[in-house]
Image 1 (cartoon, rainbow, N blue to C red):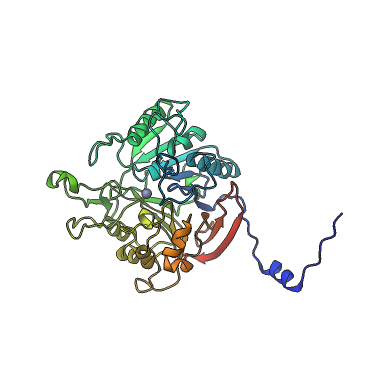
Image 2 (tube, rainbow, N blue to C red):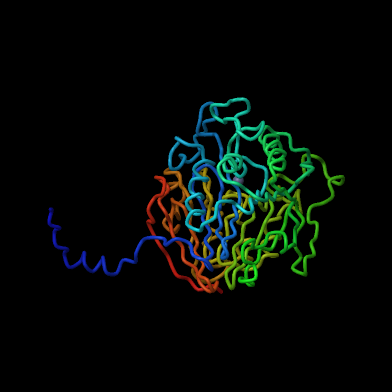
Length: 414
Ligand SMILES: [Zn+2]
C-alpha cells in the first residue's frame, strides 16, 4: 500500500477553506436551471420545485461539418462524436434520473432558428439520420424527442406557421413534420399565449409551491402590459409594411419570466433592439419586453449578446445580478453588449456574467474578458427552496459528466 505524502500547512489550509466543489442531486423544493453548453446553440433545462421539467430550446447548428464549416464558430462540446441534441438528451437523462422523472413536461421553442430548434442536412442521412418515429430528420429538438418523451411543446406560431410569412426552410418543414408525428403519438403542441400565467404550470404538486409561476411575457411582438393578462401588439400590422421590413424571426421570439419566491429569471430568445437607424421605430422589442418583466436575479442574454442585443435600456430594466450567455460564435458576446451588461452607470451594484463557451480568439478581441466570471462550461443556477437565495455552479463541458469547476454564492434575491 502506498503511503500518502503528508500535506503541507498551506495545503491543509486550502483543503479546509475550499468549499466542496460538487452539486448535490436535485431535491424537492429546489429549482435548478441548467444552461447546457454544447457550443452549437441555446439550451436550458429546468427542474422545477415539484419535479416538473421544462426545456427551453435545443439548438444544434451543423456548421462545424463540411460543407457547412464556418471559421467563426466555437468548437463543439464535449466533442463531435454525437450530435448536440444527443449530448443534450444525455445530460438531461442524468438530471431526470436524479429526480425520478423520465419525461420533459414542456419544451418551449423561443423561435424557429437552427441554433434553437436544430439544423438538419436535407436528405443527408449520415449527418441528420431519419427518426424511427416519422418522416423527419434528427437534429436539435428532434434528437431530444427521439431519446426522451416530451408531453407538451409550446412555440410561437402553431399551427399555422405563417407569421409574418410562411415558414418554408428545410428546418421549418422538418420541425412541422416532426410536430405532426408528435401529435399522432399523443403529444400536444400549443401556441404561446402572451400575458398568461396559466399556460405553463407545475404538473406534479402545484399546490405545494404557490410562489412559483411562469409569466408569458411576449411573442410575435405581442407584449404583456403588466396589468392582469392584458397584452399590446407592438409590431405594426403587416399590411402597413413593406415585406422587407416585416418583423424578423429574432424579433418574433417568445419570452418568459419565471418567478419562485423572490427569485426571478428572464429568457427571451433572440430578441433585439435593431431599429435600422430609425427606419423601424418599433424595432426595439427587447427593451419593451424587459420593461414588462422588470428586475430579475438572472437574465439570459438576448441573442447570445450579439451586437444588436442587450442594449442599455434592456440592461437598465432587468438590473440582473447574473447574466448568462448561450454562446456558439466568436461574437458571443460583442464588446458593446458586454459593456452594457457590466455598466454601473446603468444601475449600481455587483453583477456577474457567465458564458457557456468562448472562442479562444474572442479572449483577445474582448478587452473586458477578465470581467466575465466564467468563460466556459455548463452554467447551473440552484435556487433554494424558499426562493430567497441562489447559487451558481459551473461544470466542465469538455467531457461528458464533467466536474464542477467553480461555485458562487449563495446570493440573496432582491
Ligand atoms: Zn440564436
